[in-house]
Amino acid sequence: MKKPRFQTPSGMRDILSEELTYYQKIFDICQKMADFYGFERIETPILEQTELFSRGVGQATDIVKKEMFSFKTKGGDELTMRPEGTAPVARAYIEEGMRSRPQPVKLWYFGPFFRHEKPQRGRYRQFWQFGFEVLGEASPVIDAQIIQLFFNILGALKFKDLAVKINSIGCSTCRPRFKRILSSYLRNRASSLCSECRRRLKESSWRVLDCKEEKCQAVINNAPQMLDYLCEICHKHFKSVLEFLDELSIPYILEPHLVRGLDYYTKTVFEIVEMGKEGKSFGTLVGGGRYDNLVKILGGGVVPGCGGAAGVERIIEAMKERGVKVSSPSSPKIFLCQLGTLAKRKSLVLIERFQENKIPIAELLSKDSLRVQLERANKMGAKYVLIMGQKEALEDKIIIKDMATGRQKLVEIKKVINEIKKQLKK
Image 1: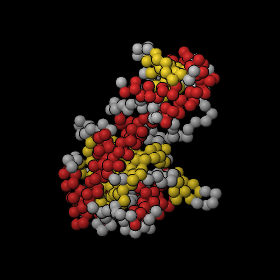
Image 2 (image 1 turned 90 degrees about the horizontal axis):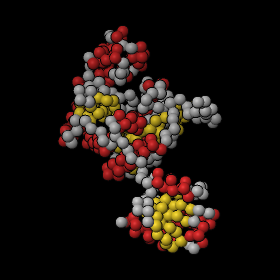
Image 3 (image 1 turned 45 degrees about the horizontal axis):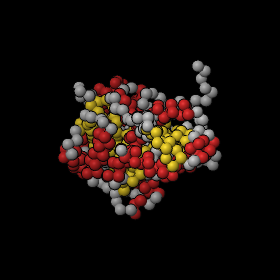
Image 4 (image 1 turned 135 degrees about the vertical axis):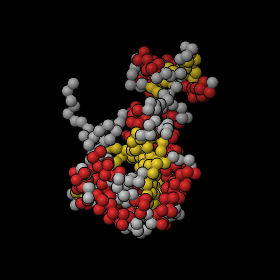
C-alpha cells in the first residue's frame, strides 16, 4: 500500500475513538477526585517563555538541554512548547495573583505536553499528562495527601499492588554539604560511569543519581545518601510524611538515591509504581514531590508547593497489558429511519425534540434505503426504531417498532417523545 503524502510528525500520532475512551475514563476519574479533594482545574498555554523552564526546571536537566521544542517568533520572543506542567502552574499562580486567595491553592490539569525524546512504545513527543499541585502550604500532610490522591486515582483504574518509592533530597541548608561529598565520591569513580554521567558530573553531580544505565548502577548504589545529611527541619518533615503514609496504610519503599529529573524539587520526592510478585516494579506511573523554592525562583516570593504528575499513555499501556478494558459510551437505544424528502425534513425537527428531552437517538439521514437504515439500527443494538415514510409524514404520524418482539405501533409525532419515555421506563 502506497504511503500517504502527509503523515504525522515523528513521535506524534492520531488518537482515534477507541483509544480516546481510555483518555476519557482517566479524565473522568481525575475530575471526580479533584472535586472531592477541592482542586480547581487550570489550563495553561501550550507555549510559554523558554526562560520559564530554563530557570524553573534547571539548565542542567535533560529536559532543558535536550528535549524542549523551542523557537524564536517573528517578533523575537523565545518560546517553548511546554514539556511539563508544574512550572506553568507556578507562573500562573504568580501572574494571576493567587497569593491573595485563601491558601493553599489547589489546582489540577490534564492536557498535552511536548518533549523531543526517542519515540518508543508508550512514549511520544506529544504526550498527555495529568497533574495535581498545591501551592501555599508547607505542611508534610500535603505531601501525604498528594500521594493518597494519586493512589486513589490508580486504584479506580484497577491498578493493584501499588507502592511509593520515596526519599528526601533536603533543602538549601543541608543539600550543599551533601553535594560536595557526593561530587568527591563520584569524581573518584568517574572512570566507572557512562559517558553521559561523566558529562553530567562537570555540571551537576546531582543528575548522576538519576541515571538508569546499568554501568552506573553499582556506583550509584554505593553512593552517599542524602538521608544521612538532612538538617533537623528536613528530617522532621520527612519523618512526618512517612508517619502520615503509615496512618493511611500506604506501602512505601525508602529509595535513598531517588532525586527525580527536575531541579525545582526540595525535601520529599516520590514515585508510585506497581509491584510484581518478585518485588520488582513495572515502571513509574506517577512522579512528584515538594518544590518550596520554585515560585521564588520565578520571582514570586517564598511560596511552598507540592504536587505530582502522571503520563496518560504510560497508564493506558499498563492498563492494556493487565487486561483492563474500558467500555465505549453506550449506543443510543432509539434509531430513526426516514423515507422521502418530507419525512427527512420532519425528522430534522424530531431529532431536535429528542435532543431537548436528553434522549439519545441515532439516524442515517443521508441514506434513503430503509434496508440500509435498519441494518445500521441492528448493528448498533437499537431497542426501538422509529419509521417515518411519506404517508406517515403527511399524516404527522410515526411508527414505533420494538426490535425485540417485532411489534409496531403507529402514534402521532407530537406524542412520540412521551411514548418512547414510557417504553424506556419498562
